[in-house]
Length: 229
Image 1 (cartoon, rainbow, N blue to C red):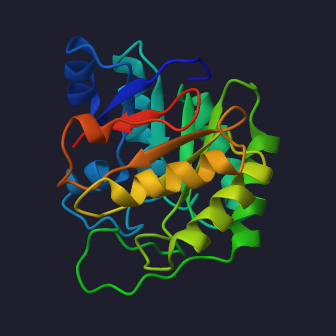
Image 2 (cartoon, rainbow, N blue to C red):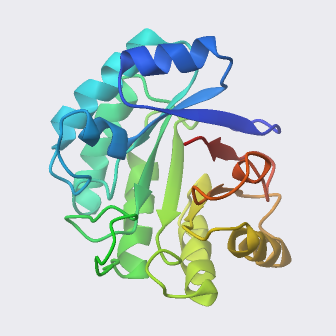
């Protein structure tokens, strides 16, 4: 996860889909919160508990040998909840987790007509600090995801949040966009490089479904995760 090359991760919702992704040659698994919720026929809105998601991720980790990154939504609460989240998912065999700055309970980023509510920058930065402090291995990967672009808060807010989360110790920042083309993520990547982060923190883009395959995997740092749809 900390290496110099691009990693292409496939979204998986259970052990079978993860195994198929591994056999297809993907480098890593994204244990999708949306997917894990969907197979339980519930919305992606923090309806599943930490324990339910953990069990799904544990089965995925048991089924594959490639790294598994667990989508842990907003960490299931505040910084104290994040501590337990890190301990449990690291123990289950995950290579890392991603936590986003959505409020609790979250709303799926692609639900139409939903008002977006994000936690304060300082609160999410404290979650990142708590996550780093809770991990047993320095190789356990902490990804901080911001929904600023999804929430319509603009590029400056996305950069401010990403910078604060990197300062708090995130190993990578994930910028979520639902734009129909690559321009929004390209603009962010250029600004991120200008701030001098490229060599010291990884960044990954979560592209919108309308983008081409070549645009869905990109990097603005030494290593990035390109999710697949």
